[in-house]
Length: 122
Image (cartoon, rainbow, N blue to C red; front, side, top):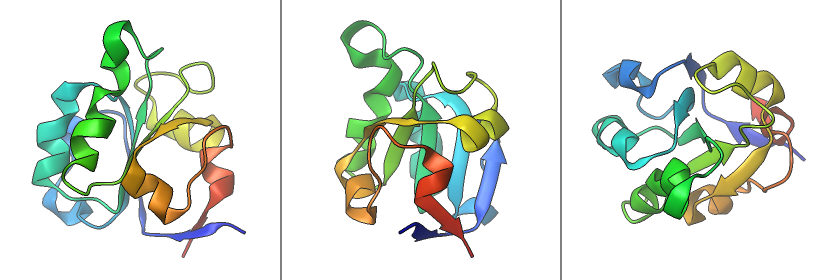
């Protein structure tokens, strides 16, 4: 059964997040590296979705997930093989969740399943 989600915001870059996006489902085309953390801290979304960017050396492409979990911010990454990096609409339409932090798990999201199929927009 799909999870009832907050209003959807598609941003090709998380640098475009605005205060009015607080509490929303923010799907970003950005990688989930540590550099996205200040944006997510500044605007606390219901859930942030990033691209795993192939995960990279030492998990650099998903480093934000753990950092955000420490602050109770739900975050997930879709596989770079399922959605183009830098294209939020592609992540929403085709993204398959590859990584989650604990707050995102508590929302009910699951790895290995399509992002969009797991969420029901209100």
